[in-house]
Amino acid sequence: MKRESPGSEIRINRLEALTDGVFAIAMTILVLSLEVPSRSQVTSQSELVQNIMSKGYQFLSYFISFFVIGSIWISTIRRTHILNKTDYKHL
Image (cartoon, rainbow, N blue to C red; front, side, top):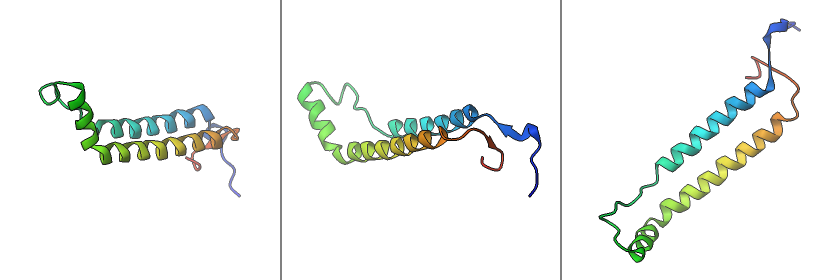
């Protein structure tokens, strides 16, 4: 088995920061996919509700995707807390 040099270890907080960034970007891209109606399209509260209800599947897919990505992110956080150190092979 090949020994790793002492400088090849990476602190766990670097791994956590990387994964947090990846998940933050993925969740931000989800939000950007939602369409917000302009003020000319919606002039009353009932029109706003009607506009949102017409995009029900879009909102449903957003919430499901956000939940799935969030669940994976929480799982990743739990797994990284048991690590003491990591290296480039792990990354």
